[in-house]
Image (tube, rainbow, N blue to C red; front, side):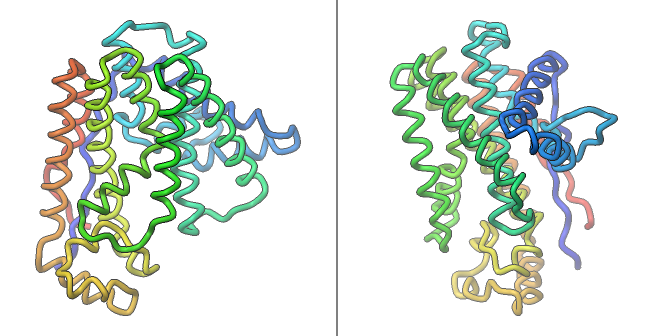
Length: 307
């Protein structure tokens, strides 16, 4: 029996957020214009290709991301004050979040070797980090303890990305990933701290992390064969019996995949992913974010399909 293919359901992308998405895309693309003039054209072309866009169809950086990863900012603002997104303060938030999403993706692919570093990509990554750090700090200055919060999130992020060994349990591994989300969970948390109570902001962070963990589990499941081939540890290792985890390596690949088939890994993963999405959706309802709640529920896995 072959392993089954899992994927999220169709994300519910509300037309109301269309202008917001355009601004976020524009913010991501504008990172290229902070580069030396001689690098800008190649950087723009790289981002188009990296985002799987053609020049004729226009730039849509967000197509690489499920909508809850960015629409959370839109719905928090809409539920609170509905400030115009052209507001200079919110422009800083867009700059911070677009940079964070790009950094998350670039760093992941640069470190696993699926993206080959060159001068343009390295300069783009440097510019994205510079913009991220500056815009996060300027936005944070307008939030109580915002600068300190940003520093804490960033520090947790760097601590977590250098800790790549096998954790004690799946929960410990996923807890580490929540810290790895730090650079892109910062923006919804700071926005919530500025509009809501501290306790509500903590719920926003927890809700967003539930979504992030669901996405990580799905991504790890989809990359299972490749990760085994490359001896890369992922969350899937924790679904093996403890005495089998040391066998996570290329030459044991078929044996490991056979074990996963026996324990119906795809069913365990789909159920776990759906439980995280359900928990996130409940928190969204409690926070009076019904449309964000619906977008989370729309991602739930229904029937696995044969690969």
